[in-house]
Length: 177
Figure 1 (cartoon, one colour):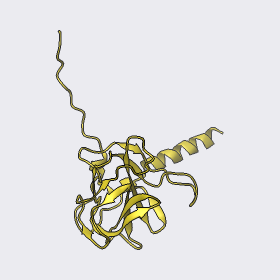
Figure 2 (cartoon, rainbow, N blue to C red; figure 1 turned 45 degrees about the horizontal axis):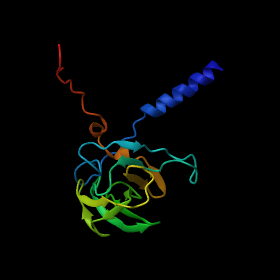
Figure 3 (cartoon, rainbow, N blue to C red; figure 1 turned 180 degrees about the vertical axis):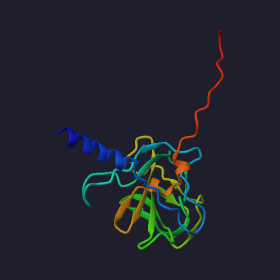
Figure 4 (spheres, rainbow, N blue to C red; figure 1 turned 90 degrees about the vertical axis):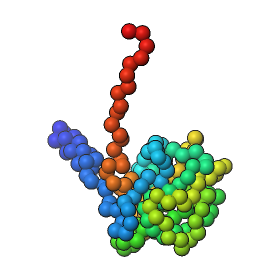
């Protein structure tokens, strides 16, 4: 029994420490956060479903109130910009990322670019839509990543340095001694 529990813990630890970083697209600069600076707060992380139709969270929710500028996380070509189920959606296909190529998605947004447009990493491509149905109480951007029909963790696009929090800053003590 103990060896089974140990094997389970080892399996979880191995999964957590396994690299999930994808190489940035060959063309253009590395990927960037789609909202910010500063670095956005992750309201809800990626939770892959156990099956194609199972429960999970097929993207990452980044805190972003309506009107927040949304930037292309990586360089690519806009493959879709329009409404889906009452929400604005933007999809960007990333070149040189394999077959089928990677595709980033952003919702709920008001797209500022049209399908077919070439976009650069960090270019403003949309704003978070006001009044759109959102699954975040205070507003957020749902950022997704797909390869064909497979959902992937969009954080895997970012260089490891962007995933680390900046170092803590010590502030001087003020007040009575």
